[in-house]
Image 1 (cartoon, rainbow, N blue to C red):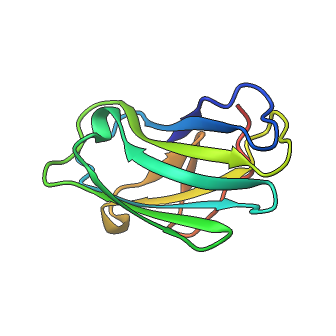
Image 2: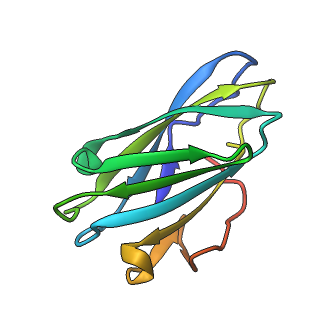
Length: 131
């Protein structure tokens, strides 16, 4: 998994849509994602299935500093590409580093997930992603 679309700073009150991408998603029929963030810096204002994940249903739960997403479909994913988009709004100016940490689990943990080259366990968070 990787995130794209964060290529410059974001001023307070501005929104930006970032994309969660996957390489080699064959056979994934469901994913549980967690986006950890600092609510004093950003708000997550929307999620939407996209690309190869367009057929997936999404359920989101915003817990204040963590946004949990369940993504699932009747048919498994095939190929590589975008899975979903995430719209964020800056509460205050944010620099070049996307202030989100992501953890993920695919097919109830039976498919290993790699975020920016690191294999994740079901609850491991990676460092703030740099775009």
